[in-house]
Amino acid sequence: MKDFRIEFTNERIIPSGGLAVVGAILGKSDFVKRLNRMDVTPNRSQHQIKNGDILLTYTGMQCMGKPQFEAALQGNMSTK
Image 1 (tube, one colour):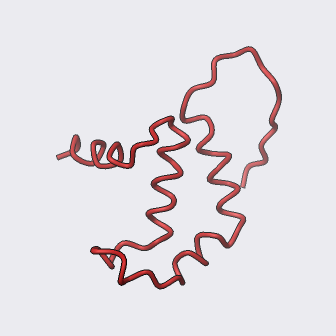
Image 2 (tube, helix red, strand yellow):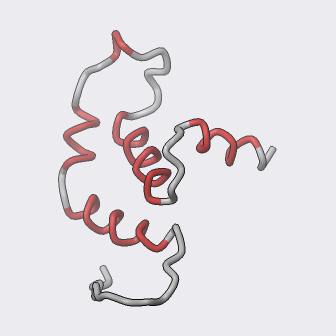
């Protein structure tokens, strides 16, 4: 995995710039694995989607500056 150097800058930072850093942090932790082991089936309608996948999608949308989870569906609809 690539090491990241974080520094202050006056450059414009693109919205997807944080995805790599957040992905590296989540990849080194066992947070997603622990989420996948949690049983929340009575509270969800689609049991085939893992808890970790939902968290990673929502976290990615937050990093892109899109706090509405529906934005993930909009990206999926545009490819069809």
